[in-house]
Picture 1 (cartoon, protein in one colour):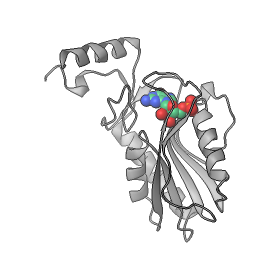
Picture 2 (cartoon, rainbow, N blue to C red):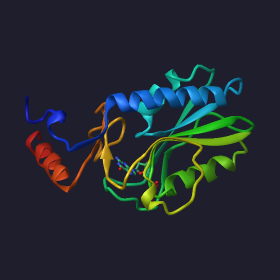
Picture 3 (cartoon, protein in one colour):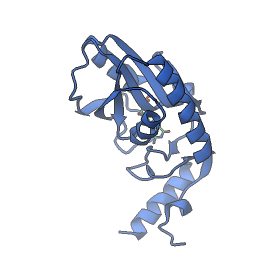
Picture 4 (cartoon, rainbow, N blue to C red):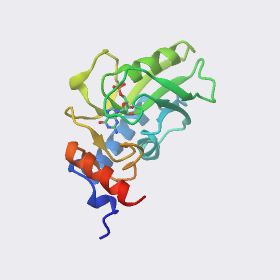
Length: 193
Ligand code: 5GP
């Protein structure tokens, strides 16, 4: 195996591919029942949420529409700055529609709170939230989350859409990166330059 292989770069697996797939199928069934006949708009928060959305909608047996927002809050760091930048806004008009925000992870809650307020101001018929991961220990704002995949401890995780400095999104599982892993990842990145 080459030293640039991602399997070789990373720390401790927190959620296996099987854990994730089976929970996402369950969530898809629950959401399918909740939104049956409502033709919801699923608002996916990019980039981290793209893999979750792709699996989730295939497990929801209802008509729905999808749209995307690109937000940036961490700027290559592993802690929230509290500053949310909308890099790309929705294309669809959500007024009078049932809207479901599809998030990868909620940590302090600042990003989600900002997005909720922004979307509520556009007068949707309803606004719900599904997050794959709820990293609840460092929550700063109490933001309502209707559907949660997994509650996880306060660790920095990557994989299944989540990155560190844009890498590791394509791992099919979720893994914890500690300081040593981050240093290793950075030195391997130097080697490949
Ligand atoms: P919050 O505003 O709730 O503190 O952070 C939400 C955003 O921070 C998420 O959408 C995600 O982009 C990023 N984030 C929070 N925790 C993690 C983590 O453990 N790993 C990664 N890769 N991103 C995280």
